Image (cartoon, rainbow, N blue to C red; front, side, top):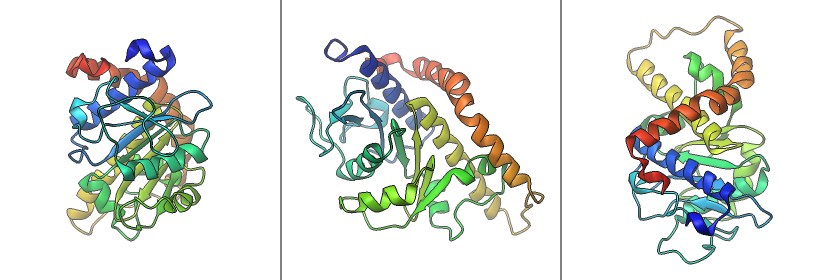
Length: 247
């Protein structure tokens, strides 16, 4: 595959395959039923999605499936893609010019917060850093109805993340690394919230004004930290775990 695509597309394939492996490493995968995608540069509006029948730990740069805006594979492939993944990801990729990567998970902690009436609470620094950049979308059933795309996009607006109520979490980024780190923060915040609430009702809320301050700090520094520091380190970890993802 490397010889058949541009250097830019291959670099994106390697990053996205690394993200799949890291999701599996963190235990965030849901068998084969969630999805991470990345836009392919060019006017054709193509994007990369996981082969539906592969575990995340098996995904490689070459096995990622390039699809068009109708969900049809671009070029021959032995793999199929997830219809729900196409619905959610195509909606955001087509509507947001900055949505070069979109990642969606069904972790137990993410689903638990998605089922909570108040969503993500400002209980931890991690939650406060990302909470103001989160949107919410009401559950409409398994996302196979293309009509839902308009409502997804409207609810997301210009936010960098979303809680899909009764469903899971989602992040949007200008590249794969930025998107992954946003998703990490969202998932970490969800996990901490469930742990805190399960420990009893004596929860310590932050002093007045600090949640807003942390939100400003997150908006200013999260993307820079992701691109310059965290993602390069995470890719090195992916190579240490199994360099086969980059084939």
